Amino acid sequence: MNNDGKVWKGAAVLALGIAIAACGGGGGGSASGGNVSGGDDPGDGSDGGAGTLSGLTGDADNQDLLYFSHSYETGENPGTGQTMYRSVLYALDPANPEMPTALPLDTRDSAQGDDMGRSHYVPLYEANIDASDGSVSDYRVADVLFLHNRLNGSETSEGFARVGAEVGAPDPVRVSSETYLGAAVTGAGTLVRQNYSDSGDAAVVYGLPGNEKRVRMTFGPGDAPGSSGGGTVHHVVDIDAFGANDSLNRQTYLVLSDYGGTQCDGGYRLAMDHMYPEGGNSISNTNLLPGGREAKRAVPLGGPLNDGSQYLIIDTVIDTGIAGRPCLSEGGTLWRYDATQPFEKLVQVLDESNEPLVFPEGIAGGAVVPQERHLAREGGVLYFGIAELFGMTPQDIYRVEGESWSVLSEQEEPLGWELGFIIADEGRVVASAGNGVVSWNSLGGDRKVLDTTEADWSGSIQSEVLGSRDGWIFYTRAHITGRDDAVARKIDGSDAMVIEDARWIGASLSGKGDAIGDMTDLSEVFLETNDREIAAVSAADPKAGYVVLGQHNGQCEAGVCYSASMYGLAPGPHRLIQVQRDDDTTEVYYANTREQGSLRKVIDDPTGEQRPVTGF
Image 1 (cartoon, one colour):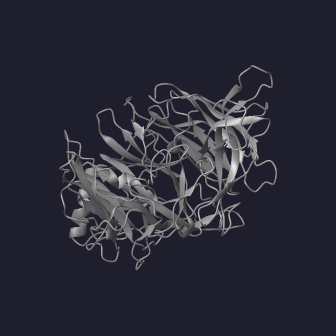
Image 2 (cartoon, helix red, strand yellow):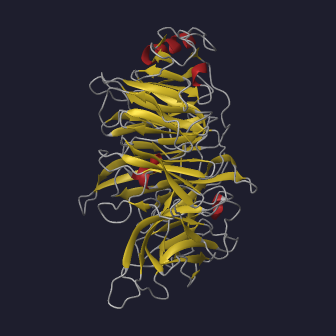
Image 3 (cartoon, rainbow, N blue to C red):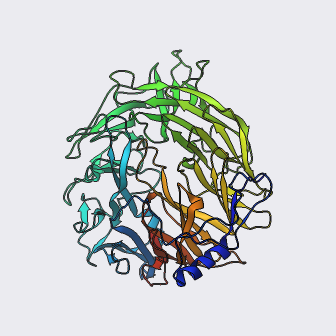
């Protein structure tokens, strides 16, 4: 069942849009080639409808610098025979997008490969957070934290560095005395701890278990990294100026610690660990877990709530109290952590029968953690599903509010391991389920099948736009013929729009949100046609028209020309887009959604991998 409203023939329509623009057209011109699908059409029934626009309005008006990297092969190490690589970070001023600037701190003679664009650069965010209700405005990347081992080509600086995104920001500076080989900003054991009030008070935790280190962005080149009092739990507590238990002189972490002794094999105390400006730390002897429990593992589920509390999945063990008997495993269950509470900072989440939510165990042991794309928030309510690795089995979808959980819907078709989604907006929840899209009200009632496709392969319903605006959601639907359609649909099924032979590739944010852990309010949404054209629509009114940004020169294989990607949701109007030029080369393009025809390649160097830093 395809309840599709307005249907645009993507390739033909956007090609026409360029022709109109070349003739001085634009504005609200109609798009020939569009038509309206038959059947139960919830749209307005008009033919064609929207057309090309000269630009979009209503963006977040972010005029900060944009950052991207270029990583490429430079030859072999004559001693080891290893292939060596270089990675350079570039700043691009939107006011002059044709003149990107290479930073003087870069990485040379590294054996870490051309994937350094992903592994060497991460964003540090800032935002204005209302202390009364936790709502957010002006969310953006304020700094980039990165790795390097050269300063102007010489080996006089290495390790961590950071640089500001504000136009006219000072030159990049080294952070701490850590070495290049010892530093890390990504990976399973790494936590970039954001401080949304001031990115200069952010921190990074890195290193192997038992040898974790911490570096604050306030550290100068001569400051040694601090040590951890245990295995740091990757949660977020900074939701106001310094976080619930933070101050100017102290950062508070949650750690798995054996300080003071433990009772169970593999068990740890869940304790608070305080880090001080000079890098020292002090750990509490109090185990936050009640009832004699110890933790084997603790991971976050979703971001912080409006009040700063955080859901954690904790694998617990408990001492039976019987001599000679091993501790009893309780599996991974859901807990709510609230650092502001004076006594019970951890409370187990239970259902109406006072039963905990037990997560399935993964292949490698430990609870299976839902993927970020299978989590959604609206207000203080969290919705999630636990997709099976190979996407073959049905799963339940859960609802969590406060310290209570329930099943929103039972045994729905697979969400889609890599490409599926759950989104919440306008009092409803929507999910990719098998080869369809299903919606419920916020309590799990009023189930509606909004869309299906005859294409029954994995990924036939997918989305790179994990957000919404005024009830509009955006996903790509595969057709049985192999064609992709970019679909915009109201979450209650009341309206829809389809662009044939196209797919959504990313979106920009309004910069506003109900909570820092729920930054999914969209402003503009980007699409790519199979003719290699990039366009954008308003997230609030996608049927109003589109701005054609331009055409890229990405690769085509067997008649399929989709090769564009975006990294993270970020405020517009200025964004960076990565295009796969060939199997070994990617290029970065700049686009301004206020201006048709603004798409342009940022550097003309057909070697290696160019990649936007996430958040640009």
